[in-house]
Every structure is written in C-alpha cells, then in structure tokens.
Amino acid sequence: MKKSKVQTICVHEGQLLDEQYKGAISPLYMATAYAYSGVEINRYPRYFNTPNQVGLAKKISALEGAEQGLIFGSGMAAVSTALLSHLRAGDHVILQEDLYGGTTNLVVEEFKKFEIEYSFTKGLKKDDFEVLIKKNTQVIYLETPSNPLMKIVDLEAIALLARSKGLITMIDNTFASPINQNPITFGIDVVIHSATKYLGGHSDILAGVVVGSEKQMNIVFQMAKNLGGSLSDYAVWLLERSIKTLSLRVNAQNQNAIELSRFLQGKSSVDAVYYPGLESHPDHNLAKTQMKGFSGMFSFELNTSYDLDIFQQNLKLIKPAMSLAGVESTLTIPCKTSHSLLSSEDRLAQGIQDNLIRFSSGIEHVEDLKEDINSALKKSKK
Ligand SMILES: *Cc1c(COP(=O)(O)O)cnc(C)c1O
Image 1 (cartoon, rainbow, N blue to C red):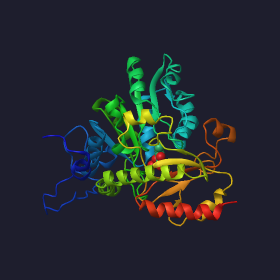
Image 2 (image 1 turned 60 degrees about the vertical axis):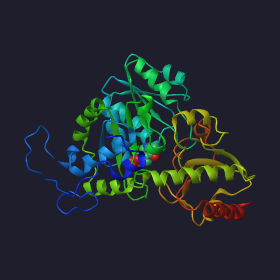
Image 3 (image 1 turned 30 degrees about the vertical axis):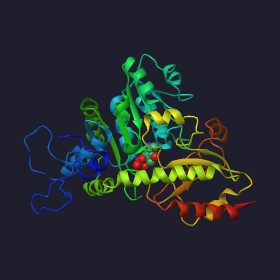
Image 4 (image 1 turned 45 degrees about the vertical axis):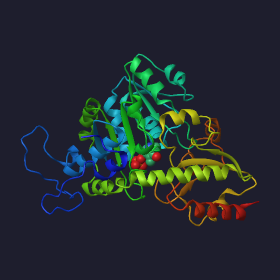
C-alpha cells in the first residue's frame, strides 16, 4: 500500500481494531498481567509491549519515518534512557550548547557518576562539533530549533560528520514536532520528543518518545526495561487521541507564530524577534532546507521603555506558564524561569537578554492574540 500522508497517519496509523464491538477508536488495554506468551519477552507494561504502547509507537514512528519507537513516562525519561543506553564508562558525548535545561542538568549532575565524559559546543556550526571529537566520542546530541532563541543546527552536515567518524547522532525534536521536521530524513539516528509538548498538545499529559532504526531501538530497549520509565496505558491512550489532531494543531500554531512574529517585528515596543520563519532570522535559509514549518515557538525582546512584569500581568488570554506547545498561547521570561540558574554573564553569552520573552503560540484566532498583546503593551509603557 502507498504510504499515507501525514494527516492520515495522525488519525489512523497504529490504531487498534475493536474486533469485539467494532467501535471506531482504539480499545484501551489496562492489563498489567498477560498470559505467558511463550516468546522471549512476555507482555508487560514495563517491557513497552502492551497493545496500546505498541500501537502508539507505530504511529509516532510513522510520523518520523523511523522503524521503531518506545513511549516513555516523560521527556526526560526518554532523553536519559536514550543517552545512557548508548554510553558507558570511559565514553565521550558531544552536546550542543543551549539545550533544554533538564538535559543539561542530567549531563552535568549525573554523568560523572557513570564516568561518562562530555563536552558542550561553543557555537552550532559543523566545525564547532568537529573540534570536540575525541578517540572515545560515541554520540553527538542536538536540539534544533533551540530554546529560547530558535537557533538552527544543520542536521545533514552534522549527520554526515558523525557517520564519517562512526558516531551516533541523537536529536531532541520537541520544538519542531514531527509535523515540521523529520531528522531521520537527514541522516540523524535517534529522535527524541518530550510528548508533553506538541504531541500531547493540551498541557495535560507528561510523556516522552524515542524513535530510530531497529538496531538503535534494540539498544535503547535493553536499558529502558531496566530503568523502567514506561508510560501508563491510560496516558498512552490519551496521547494517541491527542495525536489525531497533531497536524491540524501544529499547522495552526505555525501560522499564528509567523503572523505574531511579523506583527511584533513591526513594533517600536519590540527590539528583536527570533523566529526561524522570519527572513531576518540568521538561520532562516538553513531552516528552510530542513523544516516544513517553522514551529509555534518564537521569542522577542521587549523594549526597556516597557515594564515586563506589568506587561505579563495585563495579558488576559495569553498565560504565563512554564511549559509550552499547548493549544493555549503561553509565554515565559527565560531569565526568570528556564535560564534562571545561569549567571547573567552566561545568559548574555548565549544571547539571552533579561527582557527576552519566549512565546508558545496556541490555536486561538490571531486577531484576539494581537489585541491581547496590544492592550498589555499600552498598560505597561513606562
Ligand atoms: C519539556 C522538554 C523536555 C523534557 O520533557 P518532560 O516531559 O518535561 O520530561 C525535553 N526537551 C525539551 C526540548 C523540552 O521542551
């Protein structure tokens, strides 16, 4: 059969048939006890092989063009299991600078215990990765677009570099979602998502995903079953339901982000807007070669003649919130939230000003969002 288009995969791929009652949706199998199957790995939720887990993994693998996938209890369970499964004492991993804070913490706080060496790049060009490769390097770890400045890493260039040196590449593809970017197409080996974000999309499910080739996923599975970070079948079932509307949601979020970023770019109250979909973004041309849409995430700097706190307090629709990618628009101030543990020099070195706002576009009507922003701007002028 011809491979379905992405909208159809979102709705149908991996769906479980209700043979008994012919209902239109996947039945939910909550069992934690299954009959001995006589095969090597019996059915058990922590073995990632219940009907709902397997069905959902199929759907997300199809969206990413991967052979196999595993569904985890959180994005960090996915990140930690993927990394630890491919690294052992004495190995070295190269990670791009400005990663999701939880990933940086995992590496900086835990890897010494396992005697795993690591280096963070200074810059995101191919050469910035290449200079760090050592004899014992095993993995290159990426996240593009990055948080919060939406910097873009050249997937194909890094994948080629890694292949030429026999290294495994991993990417946290959360900010793009599978609708906007499929890193496996560019030669990346392992793709990770915090499904808490776009895949879930309603700010009510904590989950993670790892997908890749059968060979890579066997390695991830060996560690995953021992670490035990699987997701409950009820949440798996809800996540399947969420993904049915993934392409509708993400395309609406992309559209709102492009319109809002253009709207903000034209304002004297805004000093800078960072969105890879804008021609003014330094990585716009690169983004065009590897992204199908530019995501619902962008950030902007409010001019210092406006009070950031008052601006935030006067928004009616747009909520200040730590997470992202839900159907509701939210914002955070990185210097006070995600990047508050960094010194202000370190933040500035990464280009994160104190007046930077990170925006997650929802699916509301864009005119209502513009009005909310305009009204809060008016009230926050110093
Ligand atoms: C939220 C997030 C994570 C962590 O996911 P959790 O589901 O909170 O564990 C990892 N990477 C990125 C880019 C994220 O935004």
